[in-house]
Image 1 (cartoon, rainbow, N blue to C red):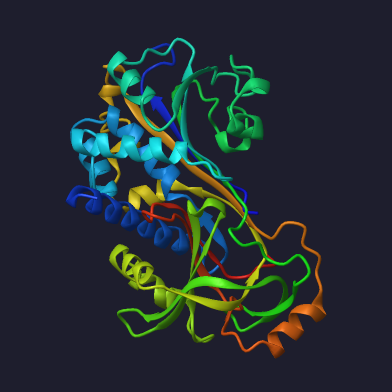
Image 2: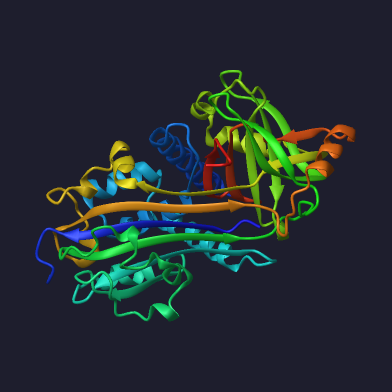
Amino acid sequence: MLPLLLVTLFLVSSSFSAGGGSPLTEALWLLKTEFALHLYRSAAAQRNGTNFVISPASVSLSLEILQFGARGNTGWQLASALGYTVQDPRVREFLHSVYTTLHNSSQGIGMELACTLFIHTGASLSPCFVQQVSRWANSSLEPADFGEPNRTTMDVSKGTPRQSMGEGPGSPLWGQAGALSTQLSIMGTMTFQSTWQRRFSSMASQPLPFTCAQGLVLQVPAMHQVTEVSYGQFQDAAGHKVNVLELLYLGRVASLFLVLPQNKDTPLDLIEPHLTARVIHLWATRLKRTRMDVFLPRFRIQNQFDLKSILRSWGITDLFDPLKANLKGISGQDGFYVSEATHKAKMELSEEGTKSSAATAVLLLRRSRTPAFKADRPFIFLLREHSTGFVFSIGRLSNPLD
């Protein structure tokens, strides 16, 4: 079972008082994957070799919402970072169809990509902006009183899953959202929960020796199964060899894509710079179905990022400047800018009903002649839509016990 919650929050404030398949298809998938990898590398630089998970899907969704209101240089900077603009009707039509398809996915997978705009009481939004946002990726508009962050005009008990989980106004994610100048908050969320296509054995878990980046060897709880998987061995542009494994979830709608260095002495920071959208696509298309012994650590990662610093390093600077930001499309007025941009994510990987049994897996490991994939050192993971490669989340496991 893999429950996943990813939240991206943008607080839009004002500098005035609080009262006021085709070539296009392929290009967009590559651009979205490149965005995911760019975000991964930026997050990795902040985390200094530690565990993390981040959702390109929820971050890009929030930036797309902002694009509907951005004009001039602000809009150009957003388009440059994303690699596309929703102001282009062809892009808008394509992404709208993709988001609709994702929400229609079923077959045992609980998945939602959505955006909620919390609007300060009395704030006025452009009808055009409201119309565009209302049609975008299951988006909705909700009233909120940012002057009193612990109170809103919505009934939280009847709210959406992200509200009921404590991610609405007044939660720690909001930070200083109670500032009187806040007019609007944009919260993009990505939730995912599913079981494996072929479940890990509930009787085959054991402590697995896991070698961390610093050479420290830990005994960590590991899942095990002997099953048919998609697997390949590749090398990047610098010659670093990696093992790549793809595990499917129920219904074959989504998959977990793992990149594991073949050599325990090869740190992930040597591989990360060489990961590109085309490399990931190439590896994914060259995987072969094979029967393998799979050992995968159970883990839980929860973290929070300051997206503002990441986006500014990408050249998105006007958005956060009260004097330069041009978000006139939001309300028809000047003065709006983004004061905060925060991302919170958590991810848990396990097998349902697991009971650890050191002996069973040890015997399987020693006696089985089946090739083995052992994730016993730091690795990169991508949660993807299986048929298209759309990246929901991406992260790194450096220490399963952290």
